[in-house]
Image 1 (cartoon, helix red, strand yellow):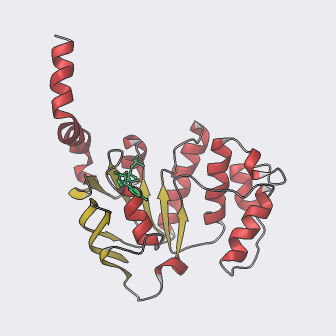
Image 2: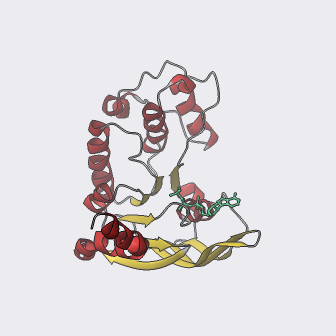
Length: 231
Ligand SMILES: Nc1ncnc2c1ncn2[C@@H]1O[C@H](COP(=O)(O)OP(=O)(O)OP(=O)(O)O)[C@@H](O)[C@H]1O
């Protein structure tokens, strides 16, 4: 299990995360929800070690280095120019000290032209390539920052199914999404971040109140204004 305890992070004088605690259990999907700027990506960066200056703690309960066990799909994956999709995948594996494997099995699902330059892919194809890079590595945990964003409908549905199957195999998955339906369809639990703080943690049987709560928490003033506009 990944245990985040009382994690706080500031950029200069701006406090972005305030004592955030969260658990990611193997074999579960944990959704992280929050408005733009709520601190989701910063939390992921602290968790994955891309940000080192924070207070509080992040650990895997076995004591193993979290980075070895965890694959990250960043919000905006970066691709070096003039690398084909295949070379990018090989690079990702070699950088981790993993053996290069046959990509064709996973790529039968995602159908990428692996011999084209990755920096010439469309936005959705780039997202798929970055996904492929974490999927072929068989991690114990996955952190997926907006995995559904940019994918076409077919790939969206497929990804949900992939996540469900990985959960069945015991993978612990932390994901962010602004698409609430996609999130509540696959997640077992959801943590809501508001202005860098955990506002509430929901279990699946409480998801029915999530949409109304989010509207209420984030947009009370705006909803009143909308009612006035449409009166
Ligand atoms: N490197 C940085 N330097 C200064 N401020 C930063 C930095 N990274 C993030 N921030 C600030 O931290 C806050 C949280 O940003 P973060 O990217 O974590 O939000 P988010 O919840 O992922 O938002 P979004 O849904 O838009 O992706 C924002 O106010 C942002 O401006």
